Length: 84
Image 1 (cartoon, rainbow, N blue to C red):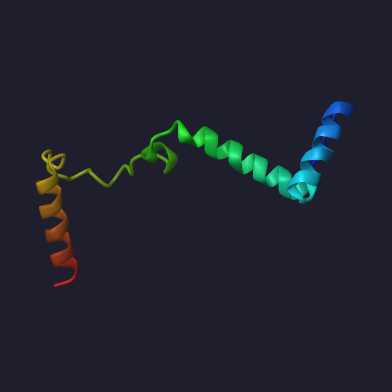
Image 2: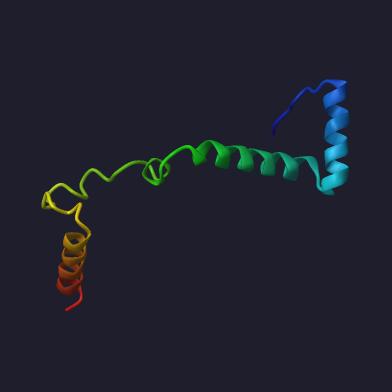
């Protein structure tokens, strides 16, 4: 449960938005929060949005995995081992 005090002008603006959007207060607040949250996330990289690099993922990886061809070979070897 969320309780918010709004000034009269803000209350009128809210009523106008609700009428225009044809929705209820709860749905509007959920959408506004989701939109704002996505805006904040937009400045982050994909890795940051996903919570950072997994600590164990590259522990024993060769140092040359930054090259695409090497990554492709490593993935192919892993898949062949896993699914012969």
